[in-house]
Amino acid sequence: QLQLQESGPGLVKPSETLSLTCSVSGGFIGSTTYYWGWIRQPPGKGLEWIGSVFYTGSSYYNPSLKSRVSMSVDTSKNQFSLKLSSVTAADTAVYYCARHADRGDFYMDVWGRGTTVKVSS
Amino acid sequence: SSELTQDPAVSVALGQTVRITCQGDNLRNFHATWYQQRPGQAPLLVIFGNNNRPSGIPDRFSGSSSGNTASLTITGAQAEDEADYYCNSRDSSGKHLVVFGGGTKLTVL
Image 1 (cartoon, rainbow over the protein chains, first blue to last red):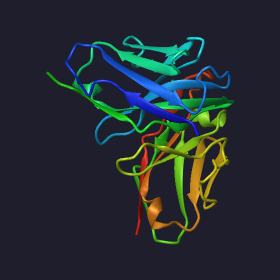
Image 2 (image 1 turned 45 degrees about the vertical axis):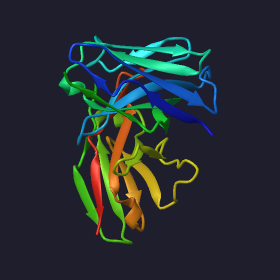
Image 3 (image 1 turned 30 degrees about the vertical axis):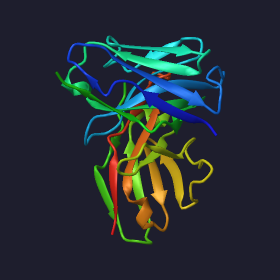
């Protein structure tokens, strides 16, 4: 059974770079059928899609975050990562990693449990 | 870009049927996918490809669409169905971009 697990610092200072990693178990990240991505949820608010990355490194980002986001894949470790630069308090959220199925529709079929990141000095 | 609109809150009596809707122009070209999120938990896929349920999702959950509106219907709502429900779809550009609705809080009375 595929499982995803987020990891990274729970506290990041304003203007610094948020870095998270998602470890994939029970499946291979190098699949040609799936993308891998990130979604976040600020406290008390809805879901916001951040972006997704293919095992080749091809990536797609939310236009509203594109200038600050980068994602990468490490197939040797079966992991993928998120970097979000120049963070502010508005980036405080629960960050989820998720597998994205690309079958005409593009949707998240397996989610991690999420990790809370607070931006504060 | 594109937007998906959901009613902020909906309520249903225990055992009754409820419909949660999602509106957006991109739904004319792409199906809505539906997620359930219980408090303190990660979202869970409940409907994909317009009306397909992943393994383990009860058959009281179903999806449909007409024009620019997609619907999630729960037939015979149970107490455990009380949760936030989100729709999403591919962005209207057709690229690998995603847009979420704002979510609907379902209360089971």
